[in-house]
Length: 277
Image (cartoon, rainbow, N blue to C red; front, side, top):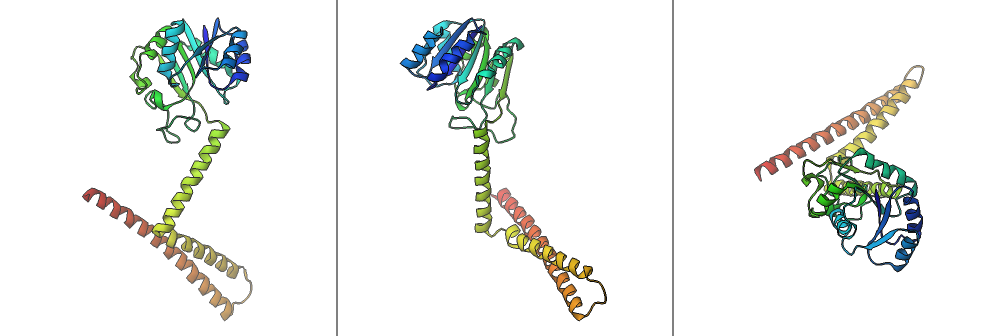
């Protein structure tokens, strides 16, 4: 089995990664995304092979570099060595080869991707056609010799769904890292802020009538509850308060109903305009 690390700017970690990799693989190779004399020295001292890859880090291009420099091999495990990958995960990645997939690809979570375009929305499941190779960052790849050869012939603007049907292919997306989850939270907060600003600018009925309606309804409910909690005979003041509570509650209910009606009417008008357009 051949173990490959794809790295850029991770010189301090390469020595330990190569040394640990020797415990699992017959051959350990580091693909450097650009020439790095220090990284080359550390890798070769640890007993590994250093290869320079001057192209983009897309899966087919990396497979082509391996095929051109060291050949097919029986089994190849390629790992993107970055700040998110941990050395303790190495045994798990090596064990994936026992599943017998011709091509296994674990994409980084969309929130951790450094590529320009990530087409999936949150919660949408990942399939073989979800990403094209140029749109996704690879975390782990496991390939047989046949899988490596076929992948090297693929275009970067195709997806794993375009691979031959006779190949055993599995595609997954990893969970988000803490940094990725934080980025997603900021994105969600930004979208909510934009939505709220749009409601203010457009004088949305749910905002104009809904919020006052909720306020009046809650206020009227509490006033009515306070009146009912008062024991003893009720005078004109308490009756006046009760009527005021009823009026406030009624205004709140009417405002809520008006906001929902106006919202529904607006949706219907938009639908009619789209159909006529």
